[in-house]
Length: 237
Image (cartoon, rainbow, N blue to C red; front, side, top):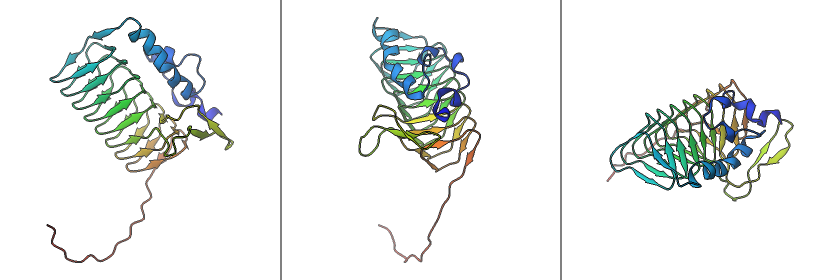
């Protein structure tokens, strides 16, 4: 299952300030399972509420948190702890940071974006009006505006993924989004289905729907079939 291992996707885990979330883990779902215990130890156990950044107007912060130096939280952002937000980040207006997020240094969370129980590594950007749930985003990765990293099946069963031999692997949870490798890029309005794995240095062009495993260093284009018919002249109300 080499194509499912953490080190296939992430080359800079040791640079992450909270790298212990990856230690002892072989697969990404193991790291995600460590997020809640790590936050319990670092911010909840001692009721930590540390803000070394700057807050705009009408920012709402609940629960426990650490916000690093140089980070700017713009107006009307909502943060629901426990969370850790690193140094020199920008959280743009209207963003929602839900419980269980660990955001690295020099990251951008765009206007109206929603992040839930995810690891966002250094220098990553998750742009405006996106959703990332139960996901791991690699260093310097870009997630374009309007992109959805979906995290739950319609039937609410556990997420399964296929390894390199085609065998299905149960990740042990019904909430699991996408693994997006270092320096990858998802264009605007992409969708990744639950349990998607995208290798590093891969570009997913706008509007593409991703399912399953996409290898490193690939470029994925949309395929569009359009039917055109005559339309009557109707004046709209």
